Length: 384
Ligand SMILES: Cc1ncc(COP(=O)(O)O)c(C=O)c1O
Image (cartoon, protein in one colour):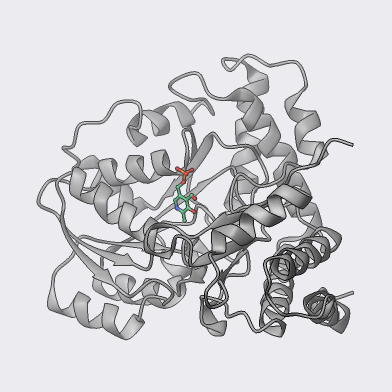
């Protein structure tokens, strides 16, 4: 039998059959009432997922395209920006702001730690910033940042809060308006269960004030252009129509499960995965309190290369895990449990990791990690 490849990477994530079927339907034209109806429906559903009443623009771009659109639109050369760096994607946000000429103060919190809110407060008091750039779920270090508390600070100081929710929206609770998020960016290929290709950006009225004063050059990624077309539920350029249709089906799945149930499921899978790894003596990268519910980073055992573990489970069982990035390369592996992954997928993957580790000579009793995950799931964590 040809081997099945199973994605346990944090994007692209597995696409549900309902979404694949929707995307396979005959295409609709994008300058039609059908498309306008689709974009209008998507807006309402995305607003629920993001916790906002603001318009949500859907760009045909990857998540980075959404981040660039936001930065290019709200920042001017010389604007002071505080970038909270908790990993690779925080670094990317800071780099983007620099490319568009902003004066960026990047605060490094160390890979594996969340942003320290007290330190953020001190830095904000010390300098007058136009915007704070933060990552909600730092996929590279599997840490979640406390956007709600950071939002309290930015709101008090009248500073724009721009949040990369690329790997969190639809998997981790987000109340953009209540938490004071001015610009929220997400993408299709993570917890939203759609193939790569769409970025979504929501903007508060305060953020629009900044856009109006924008002087940076922009064309394809202009949020002005996106907003103008949005008034007719359209897009300035040809959108990835099939992905829009797929997103409609995926959001129906998420909303019919219920956002709270979706979040609870991800939290339970995160706990089960961490319990499984700890039962083998392996250490998660993130501190328990800030460990991501959608992706788990694990230190490789002493003397073992994390990429050997990944290669072993891929070759023998078709399980694709993610590696460490930059300074974590070879030192950690990352297990994604976001989106269309169920308890059976999770338990099977954990059982395979046990086999992979054992084959590489790590001493363990087969079944230990699986039992630890089973105990979490059977303990009512899923609410069943
Ligand atoms: C937190 C976060 N931000 C940004 C990105 C970049 O998204 P893309 O690869 O779609 O450009 C990713 C992708 O992994 C991510 O996880």
